[in-house]
Length: 233
Ligand SMILES: Cc1cc2nc3c(=O)[nH]c(=O)nc-3n(C[C@H](O)[C@H](O)[C@H](O)COP(=O)(O)OP(=O)(O)OC[C@H]3O[C@@H](n4cnc5c(N)ncnc54)[C@H](O)[C@@H]3O)c2cc1C
Image: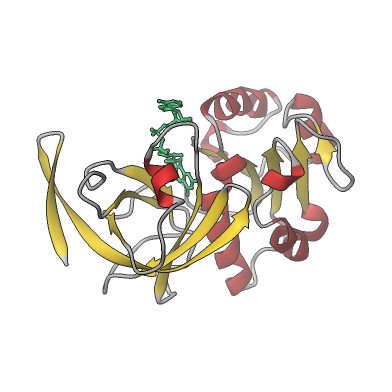
């Protein structure tokens, strides 16, 4: 089951896992359920390096976040595919159940540290899918909020799931479309002042690099403690 791959002068152990099921979530995002190697461990919010087990693609590793819970029997990823060039996500979009991925050990900075505000941009939602799922399972979701920024409403991943579980504590914001039930614009100082009453709580931010950098500065300006802000791009 294990294979060794030469990568950057290092020999890294990758594990082969079969794809069990693929489900379309949005026009460019799919959920992949894959086999879980026995004894495989991770915490909600962590990611791993993934490659496709085909001769041309084995050494093309990209990071993706687990959206399943550690106690589940299968691993799950939610992956946005880019079709503007033939990269790994373009190839992933063409895979079928029965084909194989290679995965590495779990790593990553995002981990739940206490009640707070999750702020995600696009596919940056994935660590929060796992964390929110785990809070729901433990009955500890109350008091947490999610601000989810996307371009248009067709880009919003698992919108119904977040609305059902978070109610008014879920706010979707779109910057390229005006739509009922969604705010228009970006998560910026004005938006945060409008929707956050307590800046002493935890903030968890994940999304494109410019969004993460801008929000880091804005949150600190508004009084958030830098030690209570968790980032990952
Ligand atoms: C810790 C971590 C966790 C992540 N978790 C997830 C997750 O759970 N789900 C998810 O969907 N994503 C996740 N990502 C992002 C994901 O890793 C990237 O989307 C993925 O690596 C892209 O791989 P690729 O081979 O398709 O694109 P790459 O070839 O790596 O290209 C990346 C970017 O460059 C552009 N680009 C590169 N080359 C060209 C070219 N020749 N022409 C045009 N454009 C080009 C692409 O448009 C794309 O925006 C995560 C990232 C990190 C760092």
